[in-house]
Image 1 (cartoon, rainbow, N blue to C red):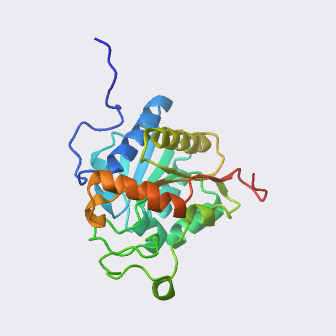
Image 2: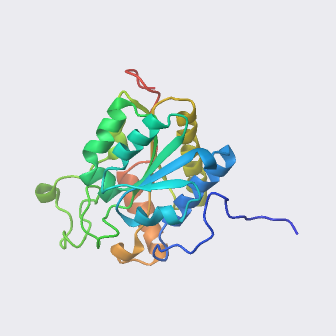
Length: 250
């Protein structure tokens, strides 16, 4: 019988703790598939900070390091500089990367650190109970914006890819999504490109992945995917925002 589906070797054969319908599992698989295809499992070191990805070390067969909240880029910088031939990636949520870790990610990009950042944007603080995040959409109801986010009061969402695309040290800033099969395939290509950039010493690469949080959104998995498609993508358009390190932007 032909084998049509296999678990990537870089992904551990264990149950995941994520909520039903959460797309973290899809993103984990894409990262693991790229590690397998590039045959770099033994040379890869992942960094997972506080957030829903706090236990990502249970799911990847490569070496993993736990980082303080928001500090994954700093930890990854130290690892990469001490082991420059390794493939170092961070796996971060929006409450982590775009809030407490804003300075870390901005300066890692400005320095052009040769690391890969997987940034999962689901417009909410997932693990800690669904508070408003820097990426929460205008009008979105959260535990700390019960009447909907009001830009006049709480300010506007941060568009991370657009911001980091202004940094000369950024070799790749791309936003993808995991709501459809074509988008998932495009997401994998972007993650592969980010790891290849690291291999080729091109500098800092970030792939922002628009994701769902059915539990904190109060939606079933299907409705959550529809919200991603209908509400998030119009506000956070998919695409490549920067490709090519240096003062000139391609």
